[in-house]
Image (cartoon, rainbow over all chains, first blue to last red; front, side, top):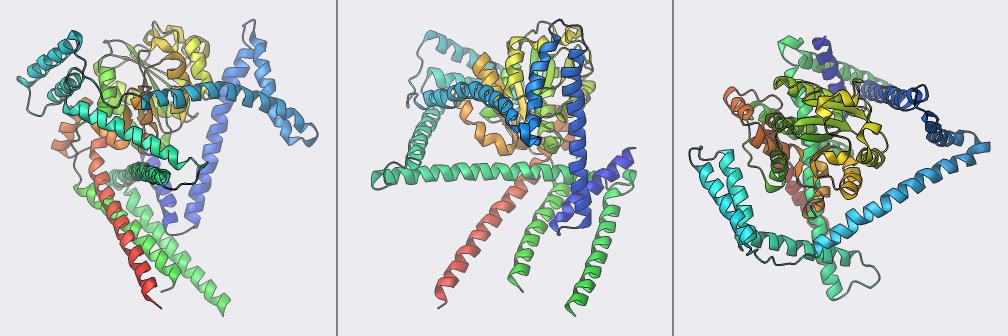
Length: 288
Length: 288
């Protein structure tokens, strides 16, 4: 069974990769299988996990308030009236419910999490004053003692030493003005300048000239850095997925899986080459 | 050579180059030794600060498409949870495909550590509705999840002892490849003050850094790079073994040398592309 699974996994992976060459029958088979299986699986999961679990089992259960579930079912069913033009207007009730509920839920929460709290964090002091309280000094002392203790007996680059040093430096940066505190302040200033300049860039009520233009140019730089970071992360993410597939192809090329990868690869190349020759002959025939 | 053929040749040479770099680094790769960054360490510290036997909620919001990136992350986190004898409760709001995958990952990791289902961990099914189920879980967990995935009544699971609502979890880790994180921040953190740690794909990482400064999330493990940093704190034995035997298995740290090699390749390609672009422009200007 494991060998069959390996052959299917390798086959479908190579089918999808074959699109790099060009659209071809192997890719079409892989694509259609993927769409079909995904939809089939999704429908079955929804049927059992949503309809049976959350509706049917409740209705056929013993709870005295079981029929309340019919209200959301009815609202959901109204969406289906879109398919009958004469009564399609009834679907608006369902949409009104969904939009009203969604907006009511999302607007206050989004304002709080993405605007108010973010604005508060941006407006914090640009320079941190050390916390001179005895509590902070005591915390630093304890962290130093823990760091010293971790250094005794452990290997030089042990994770425990690294963790203890990290905690000590964090603690010290609160009670004293250290390099780490300065770094944090620098970050706060960068965030402040970034927010300020990017807001200027998106401020279209006045013409971008003079100092406004200078601020908006700096805003563009910040946006560029953001896009660059996003692109770098995207490359990393996509290549992780590619690496995962290549690793499987490597594993399944072993004898215990019947050399699945090389065999399927060679067969595919042979078929694609044959198709290419056949189509070329056809094209030349048409041209003649 | 026609412009179309030239374009295809360039496309093919990029694919071939990336393929060659992956193959070579896969053959000669090795295991990277990344030190954890503060952002990743914060998640580790929060888990580490939980008393032994505490419950921890993991929302496993990814499906097989992102497994290559997020499974190593989940393995690294679970390793720490088992060591601390935490009661791991897994759920998902991402898609009906997710519980199956989450279940297989947690079971494999738990079996390797002799953990018992029901006592040390439990896996719950998929909940549709975005932030709505999170809000409902915050009021009454048992009204939403009456049983676990296998149909065992929630109250019969020793792992669920003392948990009646979302805020009974001292920490929630959202390991996600989709925007379900927004729901957790909006409903879990903003509404109920749930402490939230994130494990995200690299593509998404930059979008969620803004929530770090505001402490709406305690830390972020971003992509394979973040997972390899987490491994350096929780899977030291596995890393040591991988370095000695050259058998890396599915460790994220074994993927990083390839990631780094490809990143360098992409940077060189971007530089080369720019050089060719500007050279082309100069040539265009020079020609009458």
